[in-house]
Image 1 (cartoon, helix red, strand yellow):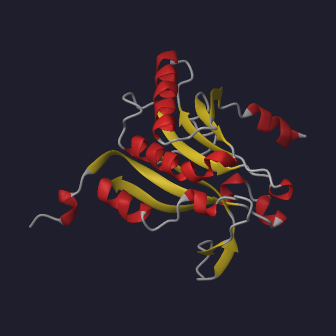
Image 2 (cartoon, one colour):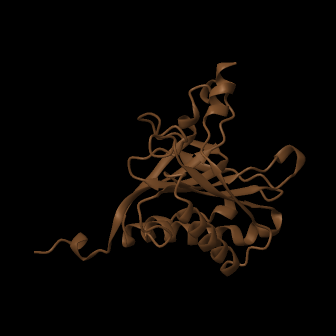
Image 3 (cartoon, helix red, strand yellow):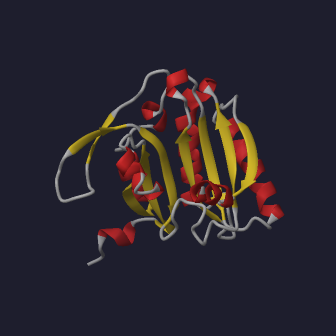
Length: 217
């Protein structure tokens, strides 16, 4: 008998969807950047993606918009089922086996396309981010295995009531100029289709040296 999964639409790559939380406790922050992430699911089929995607809140609903948003999550760091309150500051989706950090071997010689948004695009941010995620898992932005993942980050300054968001699409080969030009053009089309009016785009290297310099001081 055919299994149900054999009738699913299998993706070319498996992707890991994660949330990033703001860590208030200094001791926990010292455990490292990785400690702020929690894996939500591994996506290998179109059906799996939509099953999980419909269960999580739209990113604009949890990012700062003048009001700080607190959500409840089950603490999976140990065997307990303790529910903790936290603030989501990011969401990322990367190919399975690739970490969402510059020093990952797949990212260290690459770069990222960055879209910076202001409060004017708060309502369209979720639409654009969903389009980016669908484009990634559907491989429509990349036909050469260059993209490694993407993330959306809340860079708002709550104390000053300044609203700022970023979407980044990461890739492994900085030297591929044709790819960078194509990625920029396709992303700007998506921004226009999604009705984003404040976004500013740029392409930057994944330069981890500046963080290494800070850590060595």
